[in-house]
Image (tube, rainbow, N blue to C red; front, side, top):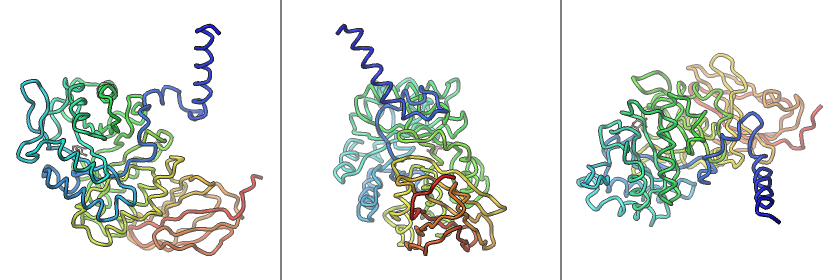
Length: 408
Ligand code: GLA
């Protein structure tokens, strides 16, 4: 067969294999660059920013990495230990970035090696501008050099921020860094952080991102706008309508977890974990893992909730019902099941009725529900079930039909 003929067959085969991956409403180019094969389920890990801010050091990162193992978080699926802003020192005469010598006296590779020695993965932070949000050197003009440096250190994950980017266009700037990471030869998860300003869900995957922030920063509060930062409900509300942009390898990122940071109740933290799981969000803990209490650990390692987040269909959930302060969110799972969150946004206990019709199921159907926080399978119900949901909290369930739902 001629080489043209062979090429045609290869191209046709590639198209046939690829076609079912794309949902009808999405253009093919959507997948064109999200091809590093990473983050097939939402990344799980820990990041220094929410709890420690600029106060990062080798000792801290190694301590938190150890705690990720000893707390059971590694066993529950957490992998990435990510240093956020403020690790940077200056560039050397060749322009190579060096970590702050006081905070990282033995360099960064030693820290990465240590994290790897625990069976974990290592993440780092930079910025598309000349300086990071905290005024440290950014990667502008040094993208390929920095990507190579990260690869040499053993970086597995890069969060790439958007401060001080005057004159840059996000899609192009992020694509440049994605190209640089690819050229480095090391598989590196690429986390875009333009705070949702330029609707990165529309172009983030095409620009080579595995995840992209959809909003300004989260703060450790149930609701409200606090300067640049948003409470949990305000972040949640901005996720509505974005589900179709997420899937294996390319995720919406409603920012990191605040669980265990002390500004919310345990019930509110359970709500964050439930909602992030229904959203197929990255689960990046943001507390001090080395000093967390039993309640915090129990929330972060709830395997039933994590299993929802990590469901390999990778379909992000959406709201299916809203009445005042009561909301129901649902997410399809493998095996014809669904996950459901009943959310009480307000300050009074509510009775929220889950009707099968809201889940797109026949009005009458024997269904088994499991409560993922009480770890209890509930009695079979046929039309719906009513739950008392305390103020500012959530109930999380999975449903499994007892027999296949028939249409019509
Ligand atoms: C921005 C990001 C945060 C954090 C800080 C660090 O605000 O959105 O997540 O990385 O910068 O300076």
